[in-house]
Image (cartoon, rainbow, N blue to C red):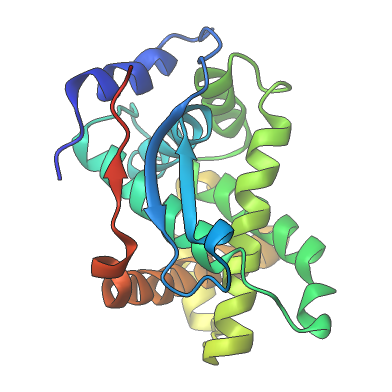
Length: 222
């Protein structure tokens, strides 16, 4: 599905260093194939949140270069939003619910590495929301949903992953955000980063399995 040109332009407003506030509206809708009630079955994707998620993807794709939003970036962001909205809303066992705050912190640390470091993380928030401080609550919601998604995959699907020392050292030598920092200083963030990558693969596999049931539609602008 190609995203409408007007939609792509609306998302690209964050290209300026001091982006204007994005007017919010529903830009897509989809059905949760495993929702327990009719109200929860229909979900909407809101413009402001997808703007932020698109810039996250753009910075991840160019952690040491110049990020840009294109059709592929938009598709990745939209697909990621849909599957994390579905899995992140699942009920967790109490023992996993107690881990959500820590998992959300890990998700933030992983995202900081993925986008190229703290400075670039703040920069993308400014591009997406108008200010780094103003985007704090919005990025917290995204990362908390991601944390719940990972915990659901672990608790309900049995997906587990703990990177070994070799994998951590290999990542230390490749990720621009940790250049010049000691391994010991960034080991915990590297572990969170590699776990996020592995759990994202699990989420994508689930997405592929249920894609036809989601009935994703772009909401036309009125």
